[in-house]
Amino acid sequence: MKIAVISDTHNKTAVLELVISHVKALGVSHLIHCGDLTLSQTLLPCRGLRVYLAYGNGDYDRVGINKMLTELNPQNSFGTVQDFTLDGQSFFVAHGDESKCIHTALESGAYQWVLQGHTHRFRDEKLGQTRWINPGALGGLKIEERSFVILDTSKKSVERIKVEGL
Image (tube, rainbow, N blue to C red; front, top):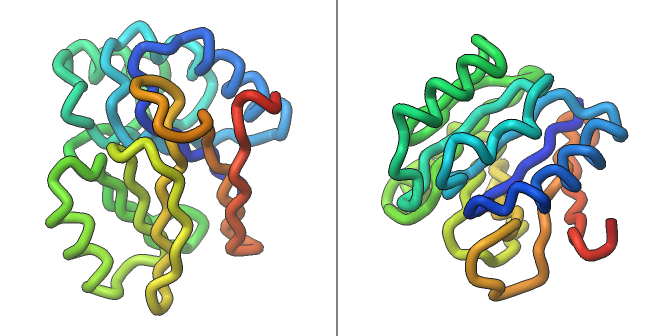
């Protein structure tokens, strides 16, 4: 199963539209957002996807975000952290502004995938059986090139896609 992983959108709807268009063209139907979406309207391009969102420190309108996610798909999931199984693999998702929960999840060894955002820096590290991923940022401060990740659960692979190349 292929899953798109994005983070730190910071209201960049045009960038998100480009990314979602690419993701849908690849046949991807699941999206994990690692936080800092910021405003609920930014989610509109995600219509038709199953979304898991972990709130970031910039997600002030959580009520609006929850409402929009539910309207787009009642199966969408949202919260401070996301802890779920998908395609037989365990996921833990948090924004990363409170790094203690990320490190606790990593140290537990209970997850195949630990996903985070916040730093705007791409990360792909393996710690034991856990793959620790930060897809980079789609908006906000441009510390590195804009990027996101396509995660393939069957191959246990991660492909970083730079937005400028789309």
